[in-house]
Each structure stands twice: as structure tokens, then as C-alpha cells.
Image (tube, rainbow, N blue to C red; front, side, top):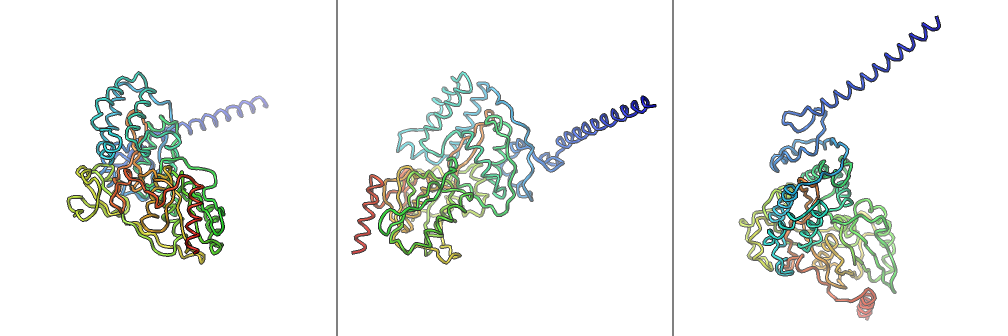
Length: 468
């Protein structure tokens, strides 16, 4: 009897296990079947998810039409990354041509490059092609790509590393409501990119309160303190900004700002030190920092030009940018140096930047003298801040000329089709209010100074004059 009972239990256990396995196999088959079943357009899977590789099936116009019908970001199908494939010579050449043609159709500073560095990038095509064809392996190919991008002499133009790609994925994941950012976010999640950089990929963050634009620098985020406060002399206080940080630093930095504003009556001069600040996010100074410092509205107008391209079309789909064709606008009354460069540009945008004081805090605004310390390490979003502070007469700039390229709508992130390398550049020819190309003529200080110590001595002397 006991033996029969044991036999029945064994049979029951075998049945349950086999049934469970069958159910798991069935579930797996159903999942795979669902993953192979697309919507009528062959784009979105039946479970509402999306393979990022499908983004390459779109033209830009088709993508924008498709994007407008999205009510929420799609769940991405992100298979595990694998080892990047070894490229054939033909694939390397194809990738090079892809990169070269996109730069030719978008990059704004070829004229600047000829004048400043005597480099005719477009005429170097055959030289670059021979270098690519001579590559024996993918490592040599990467070195050649780096050399080609280095010829552009611009810090926004480079082959991205893993840290940058991952940080940009994270940054872009927080704003699917921007069509150009979402497009690049999907591109960065493609299998070829994730294989190249050994990345798992990333889903969209649907936090509706998070607002970003594409004006982001190439430089890694810093985990150290971003905003610091220090007394540097009698009646003088210094605020040091390491980076134009993202919103993750706002809470910490706001504490520092509030401390300064509570005690602002103790100081006759404020020094803002951005030396070595390589940039970050334009929103930091436009929406967070400067509104808390100023007491009245400040405005600066820049003039921006773009070539007609798919990348420009995507960018112009963001927000309601006031972009017009150059041929439809009379720019004869605008002072623009090296206007011959504009023969290669198709679109114009008057970029009016207006900053209003944040009156939500009773301690807002500082009415004393403001000095801004700058040097050649000031670049991108920090350069945009320096340029704004100068031309809005908000501060007296002291130090050395900046690094430039801060008057821009942002950085383009594109993907080479075979290797999956991400390459970056700006497509904005930005003129400052004086009519100079910011990349060619970075912001110059009002007072030249060789060192931090000399700058403090200069400010002390200026304050002495004001006291008298």
C-alpha cells in the first residue's frame, strides 16, 4: 500500500513538473511570437514595445509623422549586448563615407577652420580615405577616425567614448517629448551601438516634471561639490561654478545660493568664477543660477545659421523655434563678420535670450558689483554664460579669452552604421551680438589678467576706486 502511494506521488510530481515546464515553454513561445508580430506599419510590436534598430527604417519625415502619434514613450526591446563584430574593409570605408558626408552637410566651421588653421577639411577627402583603406584592423580604424575628427579643431567634434554615450542615454531618457532627442535616444539604444560600447541600454524616464533641451556638453558629470562660496577679501564674496550642472545638483547648489543671498548685504562685490568650466547644461545658468542673482530683466540677441539637412530638420521640430530660410530674410542690416561663409547656409534664426529675476524668494537678486572670472578653459554652455554676462552688461569680465563655441542649439549625436561608433559635432554657426562668429572669436574679457591672484588685485583696486 505504501509502495503504491509513493508511486502515485512520484507520478503526480512528474506530471506537475512537466506541466510547469510546458507552461513556461508555451509562455516563451507566445512571447517570441508577440515579438515577431508588428503593428500595421511593421514598427511597433503587438505588446506595445519597440526594437530601436527599427529606427533606421524611417526617413526623417516618416519618423516625425510617426512620433506625433505617440502618446507615451515606447518600452524598448533591448537584447543583451554581445561582442562588437570585426569590420571588413568595405564596412570601414562605408562608415567613413557616412561620417564625412554628414559632416559635409552639417558642420558649420569649415570657413573658420581654413582661416584659423589652414585646413581645407573637405579637400582632404582622398587623404582620409587612403588612411581608412590602409587600416589593418578595427583598432587602427578607431585611431584614424579620431585623427579625422581632431582635424576639425573643435571640442564638440569627436568619436564618443563609453562614458559619454551612457551619460547621454541617461540624459536623453528623461525627455521623450523632444522629437530630436527621442530620435537620438532610440539611435543610441541600437544593438550596434550597445555592442560597440558594451551597454545594456536604457528605457525612457516618464517624469513629466523633468525638462531638458539638447544644449548639453560632451563632458562627464562631476560627483564633487559644484557650487562653492568663499570670502576672498574685505566686502568681497566669490561663487565658484565647476560645471553648468544638471538638475541633480540644483538642491545642493540652491543651499549655497540661499546662504549667499541671505548675507548679500555684507558684500559690495560678487565674483563668479567659471575658469576651467567646460560647460554642461544651458538651463543651469538660464533657468536656475542667473535668475536668482539678477534684479532686473536681461536680454541678449544672437544670430544663428544652419545648413539644410536631416539633422537640422529634426532639431527644428523641437519646440517652436523661429527658423526661416536665409533667402526669405533681409540680413543686410545685421553686422556679420566673414559673411561669405553664409553662402553655404540655408536657415536663419534670431536667438533672443531673455532672463528674468526669480522673485519667488524674498532674498532674490544682488545689487552690488559683479565680476566674472574667465579663461581659455571656459567652453560650450559656460561660454554661452560668459557671452551673455558680457553683452547684457550683467558683469565685468576679467581674465583670459574663453574657449568659444557656446552660441549653439546643441550637439548632434550620430551613429556609424557598421561599427556603431557615436560621433558628435555642432551644426550651429553662432554669431554673438557684436557680429563675430563665437567659435572663431571667443568672448574676450573686459580686463585682461594673467592669473587668479592678479584678478583679485584688479578687483580690489576697482572697488577702491568705487569707494572713493
